Image (cartoon, rainbow, N blue to C red; front, side):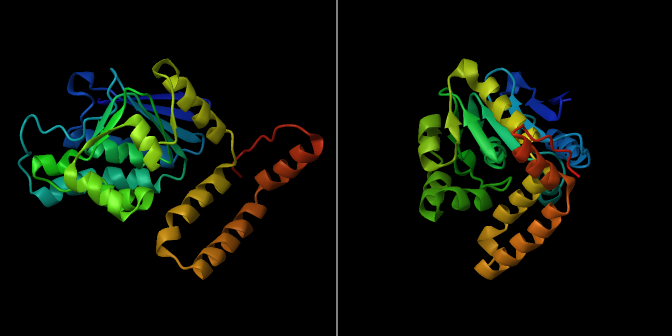
Length: 254
């Protein structure tokens, strides 16, 4: 197994666990990631996901040290893309804790999470062009939405490495924190998300992800539909009761 899975009261921590390869994932490793994320998506008790890497690095992308697998590139990319789709479609909110290099598909994996926390030791690189490749794992979709087209082109066409602070200034990173505080900070965010209303959070993710491909009227219609779903849940009643009683709400996701 190249991914360690730990569960703690609704927070699922996924640790990419190949420190000897800077947590680079083989094709089988990407397939494993997709399977784990699919399992989380089907598990209501899993309320938030934290993704990090072992041994300092976050993820050095795809591990091709053994050469390109003997299968068609299309089939190979299908297996990698299944993991990217599983992350993108995950209803639970996700937090990436990046404590070292996030390179190629590793950068894409971090950016595919809803929130990204990094330490000053982190760096990010769209290394694909330096390997004679073009972006994968969703980078070509994610980057323009996160930083705009011109900056996305600069990152992807030049393949320069940027620091955690530069990534934060570009809007790629939510917060830069001291190395010793990285996991605690990321876990605090994941815990806040896990304690939130699961249905409302899932619908919020869906609304925001659809915003670049929908018209304003489409967005209003989708918001109205989401409101109809939300107001039919016990969580909304609990939120109002908790507000009236001046106590924290306890959301059940139903």
